[in-house]
Length: 286
Image (cartoon, rainbow, N blue to C red; front, side):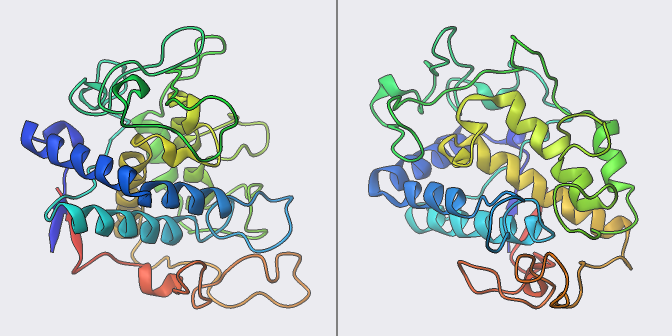
């Protein structure tokens, strides 16, 4: 059992070890494999085939396994390293500690949005973006999207998601108007905000975080570590409200074969959501 910490409570040594392990995965090529996996399984509503990573009930268990696989890869090169979490309801500004020069670096510069500070700046020679790009090989960010401003989700935004009494609902996609999963994942419903919670964070960071290959920005992992923690909080708030759909959809359902129920194995690991409902015995959150 190990502990995932809030990023603002990391020591300088812990930051250094995390950054060093991420850079080691980048050098080995493993990091880009994770980026490719996320890009492959980012399947929108309108696309054919199964949806497991986004716009579907398995958003939470799929990403729990994805972050856990990444964490295990980090630990293989630096034992004891864990994926910290970023509570974006508290650390809401470009001056927050995660954007420091000794950790993730800061915002992109005007014009091309290139990140110029920190260990993942292209000019440092350690972070060339190779997956999901055409010409620009550098990490980009555009905090708050100044041309059309957005703000990070608030505590009230998050509370509205956690208050949802059911996990998910038909039609099990980005149009669901109720339920914890889509209220938190954050797709627009019924004329409400265009993005909420999880999606809004991706939009606020901008740059490469605003794409199917968002793990190109290492902040992806801190964001999704917090996503995982939020799922845990919802489960504790609603102990009798389990994962839905519980059973395989009927063959006449438009989402049949596209949405995975509780015990249908998810690619690419062939693991069932039912095996990922708890992280007990693996890690805890501080």
